[in-house]
Image (cartoon, rainbow, N blue to C red; front, side, top):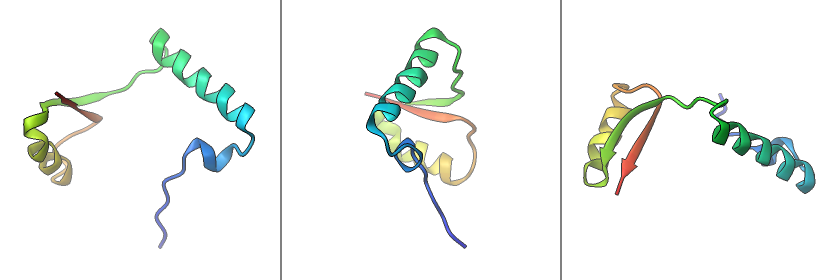
Length: 67
């Protein structure tokens, strides 16, 4: 068994291509073409609860911690 967490750097060794592809992702996010599912928003003071919810698999999507 192996666990990996690939990033753009693992697939794109050329810095110019990495910059170009990253810019495309940010453009898509800014235009609304890229949708991110926000599973919950927690005040920063409740970060421990957010972590417990993640561990218990009580969430879907990304969790946001708000200062």
